[in-house]
Amino acid sequence: MSQSTRAHRLAQKAYQIGGQKLLLPVLCNIFKANLQDSKDIGDNNVLADIAVKVGMMNREEVRGIDQVSLGTLLTSSQSFPGSQISHIA
Image (cartoon, rainbow, N blue to C red; front, top):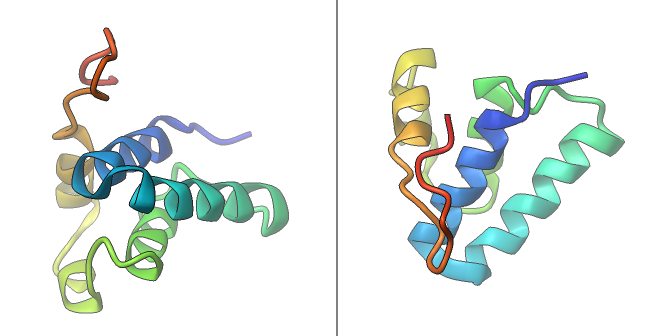
């Protein structure tokens, strides 16, 4: 079983960047990675691959991201509009 906090943060960031149009492909790819491909959705590399695949960032941006900076990107999410939840820890 995988820790899914980072995947939730990526989904939250996708919504902030592109609304539902970006959120849906991110969620579909997270579920596919986890359920079909048996990948660890807590792994920064898996999440970075998803971010590239859906167009959140390009390969050059991902190459410059290490474990710490991807974690920073994912933790910089604030909250979904209309939600009482802020900054998922």
